[in-house]
Image 1 (cartoon, helix red, strand yellow):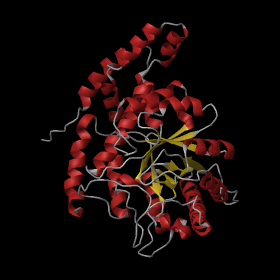
Image 2 (tube, one colour):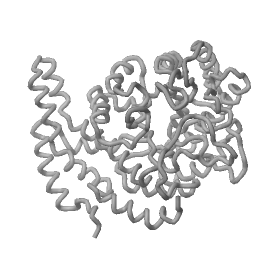
Image 3 (cartoon, one colour):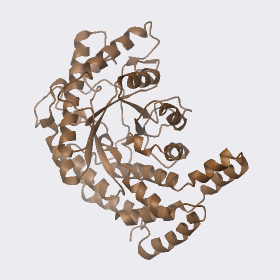
Image 4 (tube, helix red, strand yellow):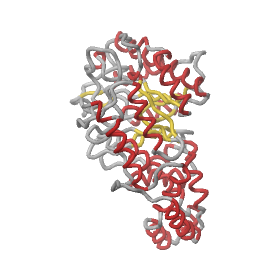
Length: 430
């Protein structure tokens, strides 16, 4: 018998009945919370499954400052293996999901196709999988791991020819995102992140940012073939990266302003700010002015290291803010982490379930009561209730959520991961 046997059947029902009674005593409907928690889509990221390697036919994969560390066996080596892993992951996850693809996961049948020449046909297998699995796709241009990104600059490069190449890549990717949206009859969020920046102090911070505005405008210019309601553009800021520790062209201030003025999404990544800075307090500020935002859920440790997400205070606070502000329907939730030191299916499932748990926990708060206590100046009562909520029986409600979704509750999914690792991943080698 496996050591990882989760609760089932009668034990889940019995624990949930008690939990439901406890939450009802503070005015929370657990059935409604479960129903809502299952409907919020979470966009999984393809790059956890293969360590951000991509499937390009190329002699070089340099440039860009993105690195997954570790050598755990079983990495997906092609699209077929990655989709097989994702199918297994999805069987272990409750709720609605999407899949977030990067451009260098194109499948070109052994032919070298540079990024400015990518077409929807190079993602036809992904779109077929999307249809078959009922999992809608999101998309990202890949502005890294390419010879034309070797010196750390792409859309803001001083060389007009290099800038033009990357602009054309972005245009090609928007057409691909549009094709994905039409294929799935659902909007495709396309997120534009570039690594541009300097390792040490620059003498000119102005020119690269002027060039970036010009490149973005050219890349996102009106195109009759692109419906902005279906191809939903976003821009993502970053504080620093490997090789751009001193200066990042696309800073938070830059992209917040650009997105607001141009009417596109701003992307907040949980790891793209100062090491002691979290994003939950930013949401209520930004969303006074930005109608919608894209949120990348990650877990930085000392820097933007994209560790597997866990149910920690930072994650809980993000979803508390969204629920308390009635803003869940204004946020696109996507994952962004990668760990090559552990089983990759396990990384996916741990991180994604943590996000859904944080969402459920936020929906189990008596928000109206907490806010009324604050408005009445009853700070001690509010703080005391917030503290008591931390030890409410969330686990019993979570197990019932999993039961209703038809996936293993508790740690039961770990045994399924182990079986898949032995039957499939172990045969791939490193």
